Length: 431
Image (cartoon, rainbow, N blue to C red):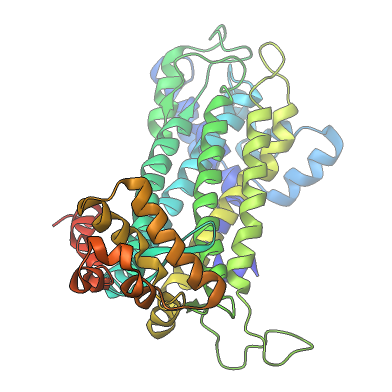
């Protein structure tokens, strides 16, 4: 399932081949920096760059014995380089390679996620303008409130995803920091200029201060951002699930030819995509908690964070990519039923215009308490006896004492509730 909705580029980021390639690039960058400082012969660096390679299977084989992934990697690289391998990893510690490469991987993944967000925003914007003036029932507590438009609902989602775009761009910047500062971050055995060089070549910034590891508040911010984005997607999905309920049926996930909704009930058309997105949001929020648990490490470092990140790094970004792509398809193909929206809007026989009547009564001279009482007593007849709200108001002598018939009828104008749609759209989308 995941493979069908995750872009191949995201999956490739987290392959062993790409991860070890990042490690090798970092080691070569460090050798180049050392050569510039006169610590390594220039011709040795040329030979290292020419010969340097690795074998994934060999690395895994060595790791089964040494129980250390970076040592296994360096051993495989040494097999290719030969004598000049003594210059590789000079003054570095394993976390220099691991943390810097993790930042590179997260930055790569961020670029794809940012592109996903932009595509989702484009899909939402298109549907927003398509249904800019499509009236529907606004609900609070799940109960009919006052009219809105489906376009306004979409505009709201677009505005939220724009905030998520800013959050993701900020999270990318926060996490895109490397460190080549040695065993406890003091640069005792390596010049800070090496770190500056490596980070520049890797497309990162050097951490101003580190211990043996990059501090994990950076990663906590990153995964918390993913959790917020996932929660927004869940919000959209839950709304679609509600709108697809049989009793509502104002919008529906596209049901493709040959699709089946139930093994027992052939008539079923279920909001499975939205339900799936709702569940995946729970996973990503869990990854955010795990990332926060990683912030507090012992002294200059321990490796309790490592096992967590080996899971949440690939899983969190792959799932985020999956969710965003699935949501794009969901929005693009969403079936909207304006006629059902209008039918539901009229279901309560005019009750949705109660506030307009209340305001008219208050303007005409009734106290707010009196106006509220007059409107509510007529509204309750609709709830309890199935009466028509407009007819009850017109027959109420106290109401008619304040408002003529034309004023009461005017309060039931649907267009009144849509007069500022263009203002909202201008605020969200610009002129």
